[in-house]
Length: 487
Image (cartoon, rainbow, N blue to C red; front, side, top):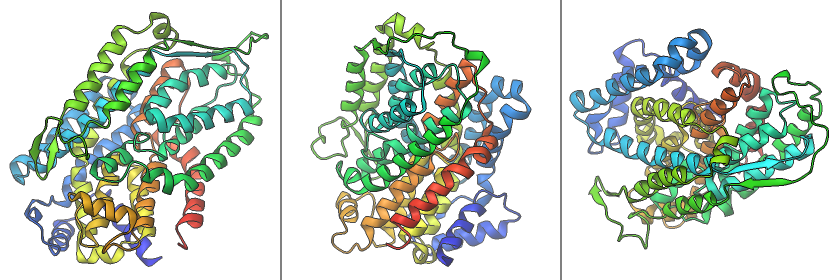
């Protein structure tokens, strides 16, 4: 428990404004104990200020200065990112961090954009009356689909049908539980499901590993959330006047328009495997850099799919979905800021965890909570990667050596307790990504779509206080107690 509290304290400190340079210097000194060629490139603790400012503005902008925020959020995000990137390039003389952040952002936005646009051309019309049991079943189906076309694809495919199904009684909690189940927790079983697991797969975690080791926490949590939603939804007797439905007769039919776009989704999924760092795909054109092979072939295919799937999409499907680019535009700019400004926070956390002091704190329990808590406020993909890096390094391995990653995944060689550690990192990153709107890319898109339709979604803090703390956090504690605390 002391180790857990210590890691939580460290995580909280990194989101607080430093009171003086003593903290920064001591942290850099601790990190330097572990050596490493880039020890002199460690950022000062004050460099997390732009990231904190961005988070505060994301949280308060729509609430207190809505007009300014919606008009200027692209400028704010880009300027704050430029400040941190400039600090890395011209003060730290560190090009590695910005280049890696750029590549990870390009991977991130190419995947999200292609899934968003391709799924936007598929119109699913369910001519049934929304009932609690039907809603719960649809959420469970969405959780399964999330592992096939990703949480982004499943979210974009099902959020509008889910809203239309309940248009006469839609409430914010419908959208929030959708984010919990479909946009996050659902995608825990395959690397395609959620971006953190995708990055782990690229580093060497076997494709089937997530299904075999994450299944029990996944099925337990999904069923529990569906049951809670069912009870919650059964009590909803309100009629939403904005979506009042006079229709009394339902055909009970399900109609799909634009089914050809499933082909485009298939191309995106197939392109996921086109990585020169994956065995069997070394032939993919790439540029070696910093121990990795960087290739944009996969991302170019995904962006090409985004263009082609929109150009040849069924116009009726686009109209029926009220498709527009604003949700993905908002995500693109917000995450430019997040990826650009979160580098110091991630580097300080990973550096400390890799030091002698940090290694003493690493266990499956601290990894679950450390990865989880930071995944709620940073994007969960790079958070996963940094904690995986630290966990492997703590046992003398390297995340850049594929054999070390495979051995760590299966607890072979010199690695011990690594299977439960990787499970804790994986579950923590994916499950806690639902804690805030910025924990995972689809969260913001679902929120934006709901607001465009007219649903009054809770603010950043409102989401946390009304839903994450009373509903999500207790379930995450139960998951920890059952699957990790006494393992």
